[in-house]
Length: 334
Image 1 (tube, rainbow, N blue to C red):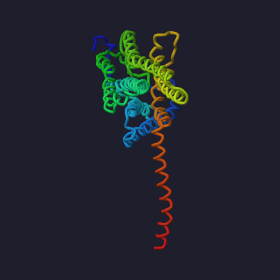
Image 2 (image 1 turned 135 degrees about the vertical axis):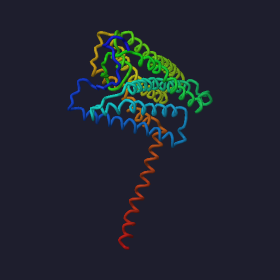
Image 3 (image 1 turned 60 degrees about the horizontal axis):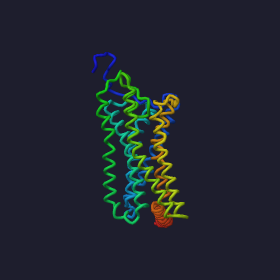
């Protein structure tokens, strides 16, 4: 600790959430995030179950989808329970170490999703640009190795800042002006000039997010050029429909992040705490919410599997219903 009396050891942080939200709306907001969390988890868990039970779709592309589904379950599981508790029971307190753990995992899943989207783009690049070599190069073993690598590498950058934050000095303030602990919110409570720390955080975020994005854009440009040269008609429309869907997800994931991180460095780009938090929640939770619906509705094999499951259920229930009156008759005869 510093000799300066203004510097104190912070033992716990408090999640404030939306600063302007009135207490009478706390229950509604808490239920909203609860149902959002349940929907995200159940939707992505459906993809995990389909992959686990159906050996026919255990292919490289679906391994990526499984990885994305698990990541989409992980992020809200780390971020939302404490936020729900804050609005249901006014319990926003996190110990110092718990806050640092949450901060690490928040940035971990952000980095992981970025790497998964890059892996998905590279998989599509090899599948379309090198269709003859794709089955031998991109095997299940290769994709599994790449997936494990992304889950490991995503820890690197959050771990670097996790090492430095415990050594920082705080001025007694412990209110996190956000819905979860992240680097920017924690660093804002550090004593002294934090402009350099904000710049480091901004530069790290840009590198983690936009280095993969630049490779994704390059791969999609190469894909579009290849498709325009070798495909036409219905196949071309289908390919660009896939690009449009994934492009929408990528845009939602990356563009709002840039404005949130860049706002402090552009005086003309004013963003209130509530708007910043809303933007953060949008780009963090909207993709995990819609990803299962997109991949279930737009992936032919998954649609067929779900349709087959529903038909099996329908074939079972009518038999049960028909058998029910007969059993009742037998009971009455006895």
